[in-house]
Length: 148
View 1 (cartoon, rainbow, N blue to C red):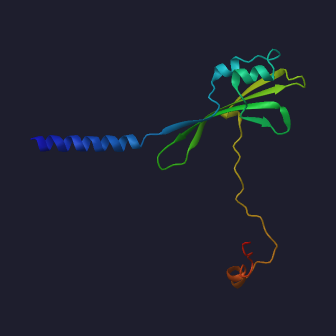
View 2 (tube, rainbow, N blue to C red):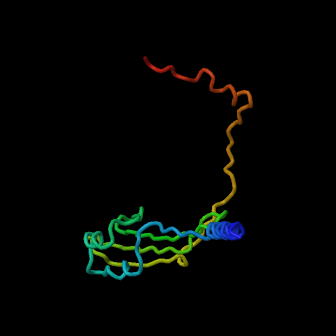
View 3 (cartoon, rainbow, N blue to C red):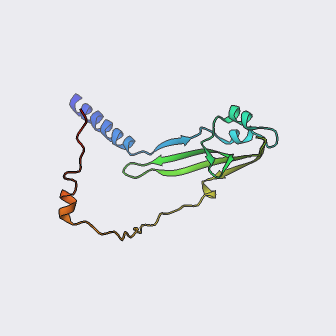
């Protein structure tokens, strides 16, 4: 009687462990910010110092314009046996004028972005391909002895 009960408990635990290992896991990357982070900053009132105090340092700055700061938050879902997938992303773009005053703020979501797929083509190289013999033995004699 006890042995049968023990087998049922072991099988139930094993099924429970297998079931829980198949669940998705979620990770958040970037700034830990929600809609309130966007609402606490105000255009034409805040400057770079007040934004730093309220939101912290930016995730990135626009490489073409140092006066545009980006705060990026993304949530990724990871399912077993699959690669992670970005399911949510918020980007707050803040633009400052030359006197460091906030002149515009914009909120972009994942729907505003464009998915870019890289080309699978290869770059053609016109250099002479070394022979198998040269690839194997090409580095013989090309070393420097260590100084004493």
